[in-house]
Length: 169
Image (cartoon, rainbow, N blue to C red; front, side, top):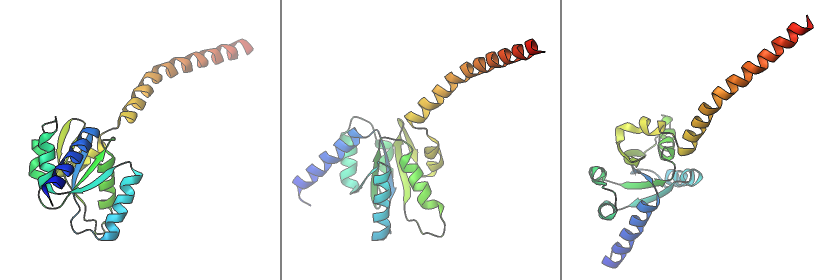
C-alpha cells in the first residue's frame, strides 16, 4: 500500500473513531466468506459498522484521536475488525449470540472494547452485554418516576370503591 493511501485510510479511521462513541475490536480470523457475509448482514441490521483494518494503521489512527486509547494497543495483534456503534452493548450482544450456539463454529472473538467511557478486555463480554443503552436507562427512570404516582392513584381508586361499597350497604 502506498503512503498516500495509508494516510487516507488513517484519516478515515480517525473520523470513524471520532464519529462513533463506542467501538469493539474483534478477531474474525478463520471465518469463511459465508460467515463473514452473515456477520456483515447482522451488523447492518444492528446499526453496527464493521471494518476490517490493518493493526498498524488502526494504532496510528487511535494515537491521533482526542481520547487516550493506549489500553487497547495490546489488543492489536492478529486479524482485527473494528465494530463501531452508537449503542454501547449492541456488538457485545451480537458476539454473544454468534458464539452461543456450540454446534456452529463461530470464529469471532472479542479482543477489547471502548464503551461508555471505559475500556473492557476480552474476558468482559458479559459485562458489555449488561450495559444499558441510553434509551433503556431513560425508560427505567420514567418507570421509577411513574411508580409512586401509580401507587397513589391506585390507593385513591380503592378508597373511592370502598366508600361506594360502604354507602350501598
